[in-house]
Length: 353
Image (cartoon, rainbow, N blue to C red; front, side, top):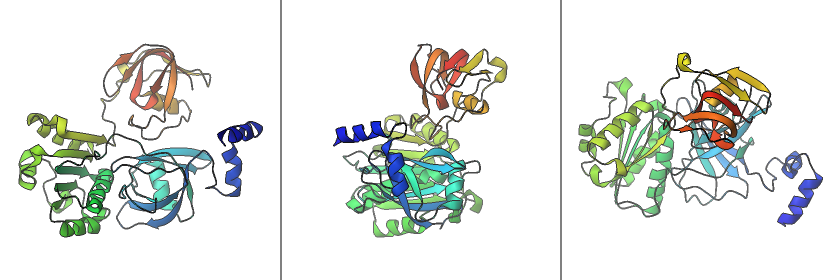
């Protein structure tokens, strides 16, 4: 069957067979995975919840992982990463995504404003190492802030469905109650499962917005024996890491960042030029990430997360030296694939895009 498909695709060059099949029905595909939006719900301020029916290629996700969604906006295909909020054992194979419309989020705002049942989106397989282990820990702490709630919600729903008997603390920070998606369900889960503790803190209501050891000790005095899963804005991530490092519990802390935290580029220290040889464009190095410099040069390389976790923006560095913005490591090896979003040029660099 695979050989027949390869033969047909050679006959349909330059376009893959799926490009022709989608003219018949957008979800009729052989290789590419897609999903149809079946339900749209806007129950929380600034968020939209989509239910997707994926094509036959979908093999499910582990609670906490993310998927890439692709949409066409003004004729250009854009991809972004979002974490399913449904249980990993959902029987109908549908996917539920809750997407927060960020101020400068092109795809999130487009979906928040325009998503309707019947819309078809591209879909990539679930990925990511931030997920519950197959052998569930006896104690679990879930700490989230803002849109970081989504992977933890999938975790909590999965544990509830499995009849998990261990202790769970679900601690969430947000602006105010109306900004919390699935808030009513979270409160219901806490009532239905006496081993679940759900706590939400709202700075706008005068509650302390700062995470601390004393607060964690009060809510989960057993936290040192737990596995902790953390996803939220940089301030929260830093505060939690500080506590766990001080308590020598870093090996029990699992992180998922949705904002790339790097030192801002200093144009005064940037040297050399960046050549995008695949497009015959050369620009002065500004010190910013290669993805940002490519976009400033008028190029539109594909990307998903802009945080170095999805590898969508990978391109070949033909020559030159680059610095990883997350780790600080420098790489001067030629003809190597690098991630544009988390690498910056050090002197002259040639990228094959």
